Length: 143
Ligand SMILES: [Zn+2]
Image 1: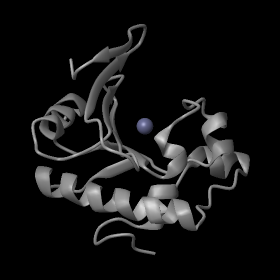
Image 2: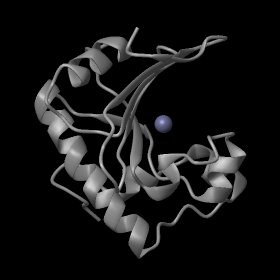
Image 3: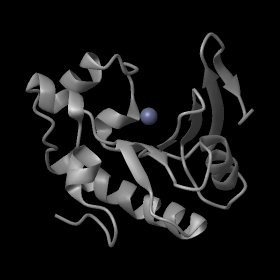
Image 4: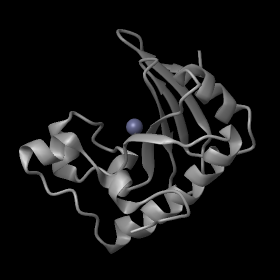
């Protein structure tokens, strides 16, 4: 099912870990509505970079989030976050491109120089910028 022009429910809920461990990662109606909101914002990122967005992790059911060691309050569990990459951009370049745009988000995190976490919230968006690398903990800004 398409959530927006370019994003499907399948790609925003796909998880190798869930498949391998038999974890149910089916979104309920509330999560699905959030995933549609997320897809709408990802369309804006797609338009910004002019290329398709590769989603490596979207919705995570509580069981899946626990299995992969995600943060206990992860926006992924609400269907409001996606870990993304774009061909032709390093994750850092992608994060800077989003940071320097007018796009709204709750959290933008450059994670381990491997992917960009793009997170929304149902409340006022904080537009918080963070970077984490092995051994650093969360650092303010895209650094
Ligand atoms: Zn994430």
